[in-house]
Image 1: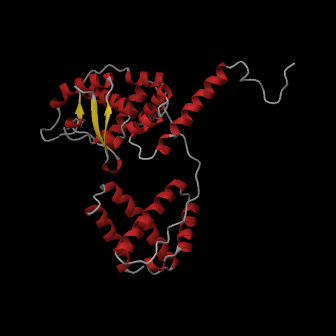
Image 2: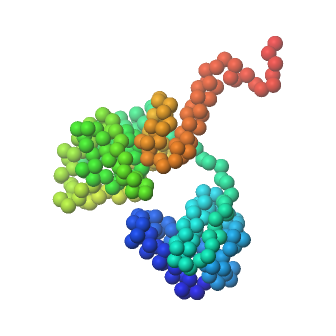
Image 3: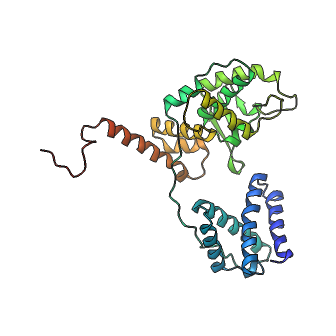
Length: 305
């Protein structure tokens, strides 16, 4: 591809940043995905965006799939390419969207890993002895209490949490805001943390959770602390923040059966995303059945005498 063709990617990324106001992380994802298409076109001798057709897009998908890219990742890259071409069409730099109608190979959906109620109780039954352990307990309680994503929790400000009302205002994907409840154990942990937070927080830092140095605690640091506490508490699994979100959703659905409510609490735009937790719930039911039903262990095909 010529430099002027490559420049369209830069113009598109500027459009995402300045006009659509998408997050820097999303822009980085688009840049990476489109760079792989640019490299493919250069390797195939495709001179520009107008020359890329549906056959070329299918060849790109096949090449990426051979390299081991999952169906979900390929779907994301096709979505990025379709969005990019909508921008090119708007700018009269293309006459068609060659990615329209091209689909990625399906990948079996993996069920999220969760902790059971006893394991969550084991993780959260710690007795804080200092400022950082008090902070960490508040972090883990809030993850499990309200089902937050890692990025959502890391960017919470003090004004986002209303302890009197026991709610937290969350800015999720697509900058959509939702208000979710905060359980009483999380409220207690947060109150304890708020008493100690001024001891280490820098005056200008508004985020709820801060590091020992007083700055906002990074997502990476939160992941590390959750993993370390799980190991200290004797849990064998590799525990990460999203596992607490999955556990929140699975336990809530198991108790209530209200899929729509869980969807709202998680901030899922599409209920099909939330429905994966019904599979987890069914797995739990079949496990109970296998353990409890008198005929569950009977070997298939063997007649009773």
